[in-house]
Image (cartoon, rainbow, N blue to C red):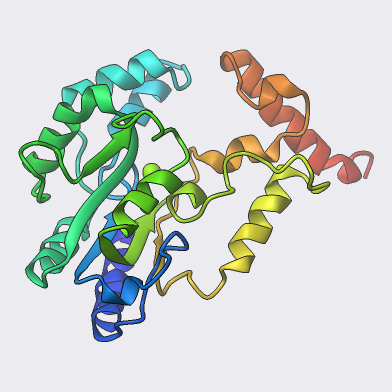
Length: 252
Ligand SMILES: [Mg+2]
């Protein structure tokens, strides 16, 4: 229901956006973007319009953690269900003359399977994957989605960004600024607060408490926690983080 709620809000905001020629949702939109005739909505894929719950369930059943090979196998199956409300929103936007771009950190080597997965679930896709901007489709399209938003912003006025991770909305959320003394999670909070007027209006966020760039930002205990190599390291990082958080409660 939270997804339905998000897409209902998105459809209301889309009407406002279409009525306002100065409206843009992208901080990457520069210059005289008001002159652009084409308009677009950018959506993330995983946990925004496709639900990888079955993959997460498999990890629980097998008592294991995320693994990139297992993930690749799952993506290759092309069987992720859709999140509620997403298809009707996207179809409606398309009818209103809005271009749809899917900006995903699924790797480009699996674009066909992802394109087919989206098509099977009712999402409009191009046969050649032109509106699926996956990671490394171009050499500089790495995990930071900023260059892909810039790519769309050159030809389209971007009306809404819809995603489940700070990286789906704004740059500066994946790599902490070394010149900033604040820990990574506080830097992210500052970025989010700097754009407080965007949330719920131009930026529609869906909840994802399972995974995301927020998790690494919480750890300040050693470099190994920034990119946990295996299950045991990840568990130790999580426990240490919680121990630090509740340290003041110990002995009470
Ligand atoms: Mg996502």
